[in-house]
Structures are given as structure tokens and as C-alpha cells.
Image (cartoon, rainbow, N blue to C red):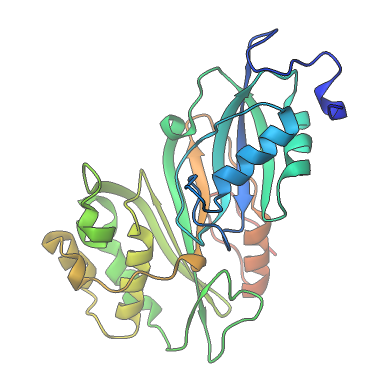
Length: 298
């Protein structure tokens, strides 16, 4: 028996009856325990979990499209996916049905009907990642899966000065995995990079038109070395010229990284995510302008 939101006249095969409907969804997930977003043979992935839930929900074999991949252990608050279905559904039914079958670590929080053939990657103007560093003598038992514990004091002012030259279009080969050997070009445009403290958390947010593998994590790892005094403030600017990954700092662990938001061509200003509201509460300070495009006071 089909779930009630499918209706009694729904087709069992995609493409039968009326034309397929296309939906765009924003998805949040806890990347712990997943081998990344993209489907991989014999590995648990976020894509596989979503497509399995869609199969159970619609009885159709659906392959989703997405705005970007995330690595093993990396989380997301605003991943964007799209898919087609022949089911007679509206956006609210898609959210209700899909969330019924998704595991607790994945939640679809927004659904919109879009034009046929819509692809999130082509619609994306920029992507925004946030990295969370927990500073203190001991790690947080609550945020240990969502932050990198760094005991040493960090010089935030030095880190901000070091990050400034990254703004604009540059060759980021020195910040890429294997110096970007697997990509056609290592040139990217960074639109914004911000560092701020929220209590014991140091938050690093980077928005760019696109990212290289491990780019944000290597930027953060290198900035932490600057903050600890192991690298000079000029180090990141010099890395843009040298293009030598060996001269950069380590890649920060994946579990501290979030795909915070994907800015789409047809976006309206978004709402503050639940996760960011919690971070603001932890910091006990006024929230600055972030990827959602809003401000709020906790």
C-alpha cells in the first residue's frame, strides 16, 4: 500500500501519466559516520541515504543532483539537491514524505518546485563553508564531533591579517589536496573570509565561487599555525605565489567543517539556521552577517 501523500492515482513508474515534477531541496546533515556526500561503492554516504529514502517514499529509482560534494565527516546546514518525480506531489508533501524515511542524521528543511532540468550546481553563485575551532584546556563533550579542539591560545588579530590577502581571484594550488592535481584549474575567487569568536569557539567562514578539495580545511590549518606563531602573518600571501602545498599548514580535521549555505541565483534572504542560533547563544554576543544574510540577537 502506498503512503497517503502519494494519492490513489499515482503511477508506479517515473514518466507515466503527467510530466515529471522537479523539486529543489535544502538539506542539513550530520556527516559523522558517512564516507562523504557522493555515492561510493560499499560505503555509507549521504547521497545514498537520500536516494534510498526517495525510493521508499516514491517507489521510484531517483538519482539526485547536488550543489557540491562534502568529504568524510563533513557536515552541512544548507546543501542543495534537486530531483524529478512523476508522483503528483507538492512541496509540502515532498518534505513530509522524504523526512519520514530519512535517517535522523539527515533532514530536508525546505522544498520548492522548480523548472524541469534544474541543476543546483549551475544555479549556485557561491558556496559558504564554516569551520569551528574549540579553544580551551579540554574539548567539549557536546561539540567534539563538530569542532577541532586546539589547546593553544590563538592570536586572532594575526590570523585576520594573514587571511586578508586570500580575498579575490587567486591560484589556490597550495591549499588544495595534492596541489590540485585532479582539477582542471586551481584558480578560485574568494568573496569573503571572516573570523570571529563565539565564547570558546573560533569560527572561520569562507565564501567563494567554488572550492578545491580540502581548500577550506588547509586554509584553517594554516591560519591556526599563524595564530600559534608557527608561521608568519605573511605566510598565506606567500603561498598564493609559491603554489607549494608543502609550505602550508596541516588540513584541519573534517569534523569541524560545515557547508553552511549555497547562494543561488534565485535566492531570497534566508533565515538564521538553528545551528547558528545555538552558536550565537554559546558565544553570548550579537551575531554578525553570515551566509543567511540576516542578523539576530540571541
